[in-house]
Length: 99
Image 1 (cartoon, rainbow, N blue to C red):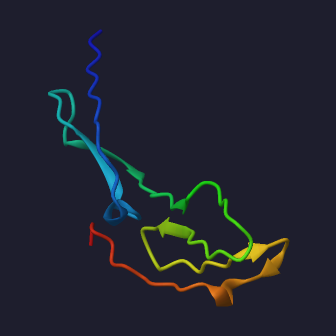
Image 2 (image 1 turned 120 degrees about the vertical axis):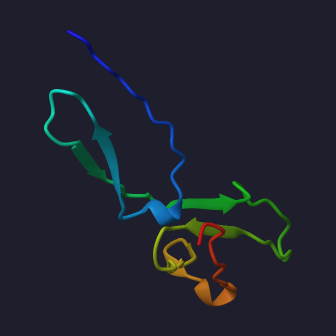
């Protein structure tokens, strides 16, 4: 028996989300090409910077929460002790570099 193995190394990008990845096999014993596909789901990532907030009482601190997603923009809510402080934040939506 012969086993042919092909390993793909592909860096996912947001535009891959919802697409199908296919493996096309051509072999003399097959009447037609054999195509097997799997769905691609790109998982959103969330980053908060800095990882810890330290400062003196009364000082203004800047913290960023960045969400990278394949589809629609995310809604971000800021909380302290369960209290919504989102009104203290500024939000902007930046186009993804993969679009």
